[in-house]
Length: 321
Image 1 (tube, rainbow, N blue to C red):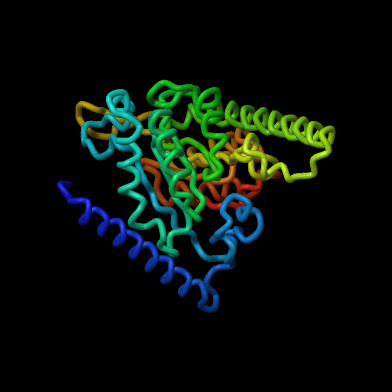
Image 2: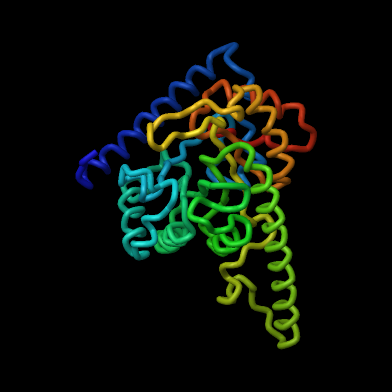
């Protein structure tokens, strides 16, 4: 767009202004007699508060500030391959994301940070290092674009490489996938869920082992004060999963246009697949929605499809659209 850093920061703040205004208008309309019963808005106050501590006001939508990959600023489509990261050092990637989030970092109207469509592990690690430096009070999630049922777009394995690499970052509440074809979703979520369970168990065993050592040495100091374990996740602090795939249409890079695909059979078909996504994500799938080419109709159908799904728990969590 050719904007200066000052102009870009102003655009970010303006985006927050618009989102906050829309939220105020929505809440005002919902407060009128006969407007909504609350179920269509959210059930955030209890269960999602585990993921997003700021979600303490029932029936108030949350505002997530979206930060895309560096490649999106290049205008050459490389954000879908992550190839640019091969020729950049970490400090360059950190600086880019710093410039994006710093203008809104202290804005109380922004409830959470969303780093999405990240194509490479290298860029993801740069973001985690930035979060560790800035230590934002807001929770954050990071989601990845994927090229198949196992790998993110740059080629790293989502469950076997990405999830373990992000596990120690205490500033990430969730990790997930977006801008991905629907058929790839079940395998990605199922393998990520299994890896999270494995990492949780390893942390539990490590903690128990450390406690035994401390007891044997006669120490009563808190485990949280031990630097070797200070960054470990335990219990309810484990990474949650987020998922918001594309509608299913294909992308023609030469024509720079979306093309019809059998996968894109409309909102009801999209919603029907969501039941398998919830099952694959198990108890750690917290946020579910849609990315490119999805509409409010997709989200509405998905809520209807999941409403009667016993044990999913998704009805108590935000649907992102």
